[in-house]
Image (cartoon, rainbow, N blue to C red; front, side):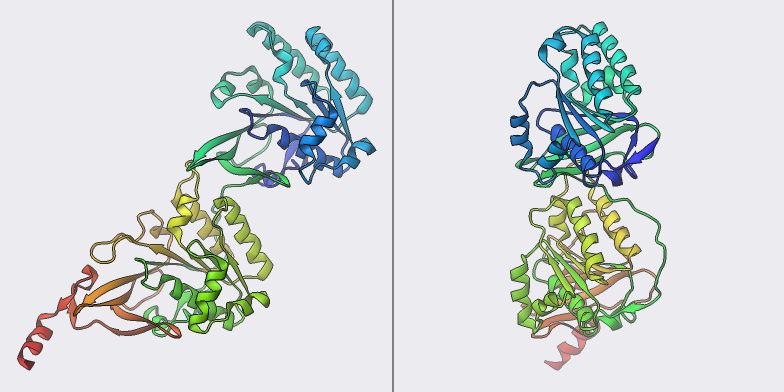
Length: 480
């Protein structure tokens, strides 16, 4: 047996290398999920690598019609038809009416003449239409017995739901099953791919997000946490006056930092300032923003004297505004960008909006755990912002279950003091390091965020409505 590329973007990672040849793999799903695009892409990409390929269809569609449907995809290369790397073999309806022996004989005649490495039968269900259950079982058994002698990778498409697939005769005859489905996602549907079975090889099970683009079928594998290979015992400056002192000398290199606070408390400013500090030290950075688009980020940063465009031009900074992206597509984009610019720092601004991008079959803590682990393994120091709902009073840090994954948690809050709204900052948690336990004032000025003295004369600060401590109140009373 030989492992060969699937020819489908992202699927080799899910199958830990690709398909086995010879083997028989069923690509199943309801109408419109992309099965034909999937197998055509596999076929033509294999043909580019000099594999001999055969496309068998029982739908009696003219080649011109198939060409018309597939020509919009970049993988569909007409020259491969001319060279003979891809052969179309339509099975005439008259042969189908003659029964299973005639169908098998017709296909085997063509296989003996062409000797293909990869065969697509699209769809396989058509050959068994009109047969009763016993006859259908017998046909599939005879047909699959014949396939075993072809010494090729055979990809079958079959129209079915997941429930029908479990009861199908095809399910136990094939070596592998890949199911493509749709799930509702707000006002649209999202595709997913699930490898249900693959004899003789390991694979990542469960649902993987996918979509059809101009390049064809693309699979975005789920994130998988792996063990961290190394830890750099060094500090990274926060870039913010006073915050380095509060954190015992800065963030730990490769750590995850959560900055949580209500709207307007300075989360984005603090995060961008952290990135700018790295850029000034020639540490490339990435800003992933769900709050603002690229142009708005560039314009807002000028208020603090930060010319981010200049860093972009020097390939030190990449801004990603994934307003319409798939969450797993985003994860791959982040990884690719890290490799491209050799990033050392990352700001992910707006975890609440990121959560809304996830399909129903994905748990947000699991997704974020994967992102955080990937960044830790690359020793990327990452800062994540989260918007809490309450301006003052009792709050939740995230309400999403991601805080246990964070090494450092910083809380920004509004305070009402003498009818004036002021902002506070506190370090609630910092793994592997001592940190300041005081609640200090943070001010957003012309040069960004600045940490000032603690609110030492007040109690109840976390309530948002602090009061003077008894001693301070006593002193103040006797001043009057």
